[in-house]
Every structure is written in structure tokens, then in C-alpha cells.
Image: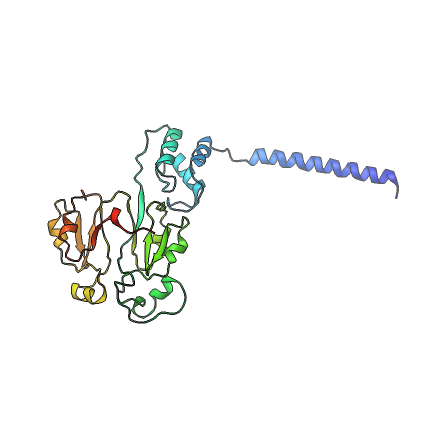
Length: 271
């Protein structure tokens, strides 16, 4: 093959490559979207878990929302108080008050306390079991199914199934809300880390039936509500619920509860 032809072809290809490179570089500048330095700085303060616990698609989306003033600096539950402080500095705002939260499982129905109506053998999915007769093998149709869908969904290994009941490790929980989303019985809620008292039951049956199904259920007597000095406890559908924003931690509800289902959160079993 003629050497001259090879050289000419090589030069032509090099020139074409150079022209294409220049055109691509020019197009990149012309069509580029100016980056917001504030968004980048906020993003650097976020942990990068992309768990969605903030309500946004991920850390990038949250950083953009914070930079635009659409979300608070304390919106990241995983980053906690430290991330909130750093983001407040980036935004030039006073330190945002971060209230740490944890997931809480409203059930005390472990295997030694609840009754069973049949032996379940099948898919290890709480959702699928909740569609079975009786909403599960346990007599209580509102209690923890104990198959660990919440534990599988938790990206921080903060939930474990202990004796047939999901238990949250308060120190490991980042309040991302994944467990809340997957629980078919709506048993899990996010509460303040320092909430003094919690109701360890979610059964909505009447007292007599509750006692027949479980040794650790709320009987809906309303004594806790009557004795609460701040009106923090309400009774709806035979189950007590504590409004943590009103609770002062006096402990009268726990003291008067005949079923002993109102307990101090700090005394709650952790995995």
C-alpha cells in the first residue's frame, strides 16, 4: 500500500477528530446548565444515602430543594443535627432546630404473649401474609406479623425480629421511614427520640376480645385519657394514642394503665 495514502488518511482522520472535539466542546458550553454553587455546597453536607427519608428522590433533589428554600436545612433525618448545622451555615441562616426521630413498633405481641390461629408456611412477606385469612397467623389482626419485611427494608440494619415481633434499635435508627412504608398493618410510626412514653399496642378490638388474643394488649378502657393532665392521650377505635407534642412525661398514664401497655420508651427492648 502507498505510504503517502496512509499518511494522508491518518492526517484527515486526525483533523476530523480535532474538529469533532472542538464542536463537542463548543456545544457543551453553549448548552450547559449553569451549576448553582449553593446546591453543590449543600449536597456536600448530606450523607449520600439517597434513602428518600426526607421525602425527596435522593440527596441531589433535597440539596436543590434546600438551596431554593423549598425545604428546611434539617430535612435530612440521616444527617441529623450535624448536617442541619452545616447546611444552615451554607444557607446563611440561624441553626435549624433538628428534632431527632426514631421508628417505633406499636406492638408487644411477641410469640409468648399472643395466640396463634394456625401455623403459617409460605412467603416471608408481611404484605402477602396480611392478605391471608385472619390477616396472619396471630390471633390479633392488627399486630406485628413477625416476618421482617421492615427489617429487610431498613438500610441501616436498625430493625430485627425478636421472638416474633419487630424491634427497633433506637441508636441505629435514622428515621428514614422505609419501615413505615412497608408495614401492611401500619404499626410503625416515627416519634421523637426523647419521647417519654409510648403505647405498645395497636389493636382496635374491644377489651374482652383483646384479652382473649394477647396478654399485652390495650383494652380501650380510657383510664389513661382521663388521668392525663395535658390532654396528650386520645382514645380512638379502642386504642390509646399519645400526642408527643403535648406529653410532659409525668407518667400518670403508665401508672394507671391496668393492661400495662403504656411504657417508657427508654425502657423498651432494643435489638
